[in-house]
Length: 258
Image 1: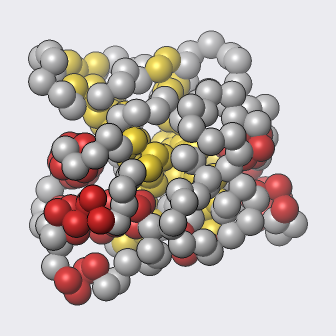
Image 2: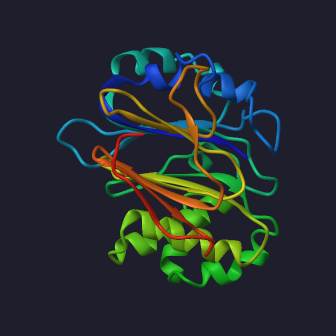
């Protein structure tokens, strides 16, 4: 299991969402408050961000715990962005180590993270791998369950499927193969999408329109609301949409800021 987050809004320094919050990713790496599976997230971390005028994101990923990286404080102090996605990793047994196994995964204008696990991976998820060409399988950044999910999502995105629909399709396809935990999170720098399937996700919209979504709240302040389980969240500067991922009710639209 892992903890992840994404931010969209006015440009901020990376440290304001990565290091400064009292219960943010730094704290969640060693003392998460709401983590249901595992106890710490010390098997790597990563952060991706977008520079003004460049739709292709930059990434910074490391193998060890986030607190052990002496270079991060300077980087996070000076780099600013309007769109950020990051994660701290708790590796699933049997998955590869190394910085290449840490989220966010990236291709083109997209960043992606997976908070969860695929029990029985890789054998139980061969049908999922069969959804993409062999050449794309050979391009996996790491031998991990999250990298496989990203490859399938990316295949859908490259075929023209919109971001939220791509996450929802892959989440539902994987859920049919095992009792998987499938909190997926992705952004293209202008919008974000997230599935909630088996773990927590919270969101907060500030008065200036900035949006923060995270596995658990970064502080005890007002404004945080939990996204229901078995839901797809799609959001941008204009508003957000919540869609049930199981056939349990009608689609809802939330045009007002969160």
